[in-house]
Image: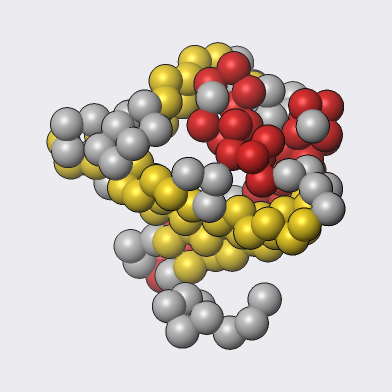
Amino acid sequence: MAHDPDLDPDLDLVLTREIRAPRDVLWACWTQPEHLVQWFVPRPHKVVACHLDVRPGGACNTTFDVDGHEMENKGVYLEVVPQEKLVFTDTYTEGWKPSPEPFMTAIITFDDLGQGRTLYTAVVRHRTAEAAKNHRDMGFYDGWGTVATQLEDYALGLA
């Protein structure tokens, strides 16, 4: 990925992957709950609840089952450019209510490469360098990389 002046190496984690599926299919995977639950967390963990209201200010809520423990993630969409870009955050919840412990903002882009391929980029921004380091140390690249592979595999079944 070329140097992006908007990226802060202390705060932003970036995953870029060429995916062998068209961006309209990837868009559906990211914006329709029945698809998102199929690939959104590294297996064997799973999404057990999902509510998406894909519009600026709309809810972006998921609940994960991780080793028998439910983890609720509530957030909102900040920007929605159909089939091109999704920006969501857990800094706020639906109705612009501030979260007590915000963690990240994600910027997901889908660039059409033609021939049914998409350049998929996830930029995950953090409020502090410590939060970014913690996310990196938690396994950001392995986790988000695994999820990108699951996304590709699932999308190929839909394409």
